[in-house]
Image (cartoon, rainbow, N blue to C red):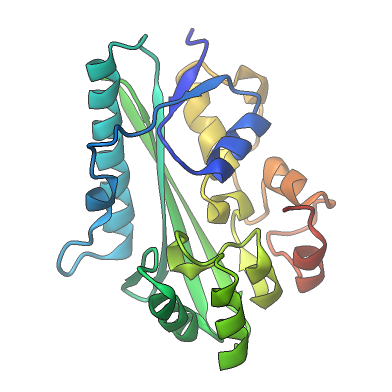
Length: 240
């Protein structure tokens, strides 16, 4: 049985969520000469689902090569990628403030999808999973968008917002996995870990339904009742 895994992600949120599962892990971050951003380039006419799955597999390939290059002990590697989509349009990380304002303006008053793909693997074996959620923004004024972008929070975030941050005040409805929107869906992650003999304490977790998983609910520090967060729950959840 594997005693630990590698997490090939620079996201502190993903590491925090993985720690909630009690999984021992080590970071496997890119070398300075690696062009990680190039992996996230969108191909012509690529649809969001195909994009997020492909990028996650590319991240896993790069991480496996990194592990071999460094001569580190063998262990499964966990990779993840999150994308925001409105129809067939992919909203990646904004390049600058003006790009963030553009994205938020397009998402304003609409429901969009947030897809997070996972890949856990070694040279001999690979497994993957996908979490898809829907997020509805209230209609945002130009002033709201300007103030939010000025906070700096949208930079480096898919879709130019962080669900666990100030953007929570704009979100009127969520359906799906809150942790998946953050970047690492707990239910799907635990399932992948179990297939590798890791995270056995969660062996009896139920199959996902329309409701949030227990771990998603724990993130909000509120009782289980549905797969939707109310504006009040969003405003009161305990996150930095």
